[in-house]
Length: 253
Ligand SMILES: Nc1ncnc2c1ncn2[C@@H]1O[C@H](COP(=O)(O)OP(=O)(O)OP(=O)(O)O)[C@@H](O)[C@H]1O
Image 1 (cartoon, rainbow, N blue to C red):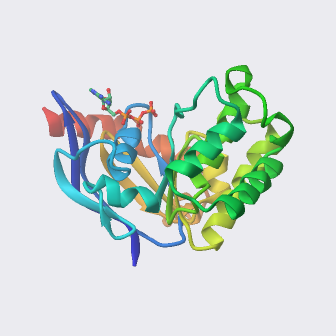
Image 2 (image 1 turned 120 degrees about the vertical axis):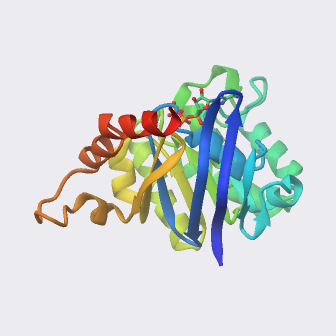
């Protein structure tokens, strides 16, 4: 089964066509690196795929569930947004217990899982401190645990390593790979290209709401004509540079 499928998925905000006829077909157990310049439509896409924004046109399904059926979608997905919703007055323990309760997770294995994840991210010693007193990285770790706690089929991660120290960033990269190895599909949006190079099976590049490239990272960076290898950054800059901007201008008038 495909984990994420969209057909002509589009989102318009007044004059702005934020996502334009997006076609995705992402198999289960894949890490999909979703790249694009600022304003390309990545967050809008993720908000549609997680049921938080209604498509203007087109359709999509995640884990076999229509993205417009938000209640049915919820147990199947986890989402780490750019600005995660956390209760400032709660401790990480309280926050994660609360989320576990909302999701009706069984108490005992969930508590052990929370401890394991807190340990892995080196947050257990601070788990009884109020989130209001956390650093950006500590918040990010809490939000990451919140997104994967219920072992969803598909996880959407927006800049998961933002604000993390190198050790924590590496742990998250390893966790992403482990998730995919266990059959979870990871939809990863980040501007940190080495993270994508390290973990993604497939890379999609969004520009002006449209998918302008999609392939395995090594296929994207290999220049078929010359046999040379480019970096992912070279490919990104080439595909989202002035040539495409001219195309987009010509298309939109
Ligand atoms: N709620 C909204 N109302 C109006 N326009 C919006 C809204 N959300 C996004 N947009 C517009 O849609 C376009 C795509 O925005 P989006 O946030 O999806 O981009 P992005 O690729 O996530 O960018 P970044 O890398 O900067 O996070 C932008 O032109 C943005 O101004």
